[in-house]
Length: 255
Ligand SMILES: Nc1ncnc2c1ncn2[C@@H]1O[C@H](COP(=O)(O)OP(=O)(O)OP(=O)(O)O)[C@@H](O)[C@H]1O
Ligand SMILES: [Mg+2]
Image 1 (spheres, rainbow, N blue to C red):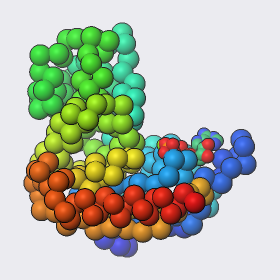
Image 2: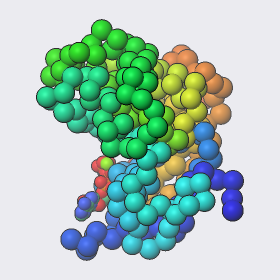
Image 3: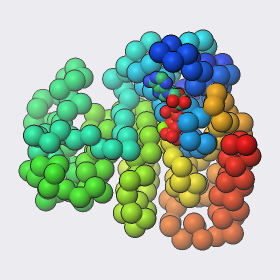
């Protein structure tokens, strides 16, 4: 027994279809309630890591433990959001956010689920759009809704794979603050994959840097900025230095 929430032990993933070793010798330890970011060169296996964590694929060797239990398939205590919001176009925003309750068995009533979904939609500024269809929302609004869908069943683990990559800089920073506030209030353990080093440094307490494929962790940075963080810190010398160091490490890992 350990007090780590997530333990990834010497994991490798070899995709059989093309005999491609995506990650190898991957080790990570993550504490409950923490916010971690994963950065690294394109194609190094970050999304593969997220899929292993959420139980969507199984490691070829090694194991992944969450709460001391080995992950052997999709988990109901995980919430996920990806680069493209993947909303169902025939469902209104509220109905899209309610999807996890249809998949997961929960004791709560439909009324309570709807209340929870509306509460979240209001927090992210979509209170007036619950009855809109996804195609009536902007990209940023769809991403907000997708964040609500990932969180509506109160997951213990939130897995985000480049959730804000497709957004303009202003909307992206706005959503950083939305995520920051939700995390401070609920302290779900969060793992965020991003190519945006400012995003990683602003949101995370720990940043894992990955090597080129086959990916493994080459460095871990502890980020010591106090919570709740203001966007102003992104202009501080310490912050800029951290993002420069990350950039250098990733550039070295590419070559
Ligand atoms: N389902 C799959 N089948 C076969 N190969 C795959 C599959 N998924 C990913 N790969 C390969 O595994 C490697 C790692 O891919 P992955 O998507 O995990 O990288 P990534 O770090 O998320 O990249 P990016 O930063 O571009 O999103 C790549 O070479 C990719 O082609
Ligand atoms: Mg990816």
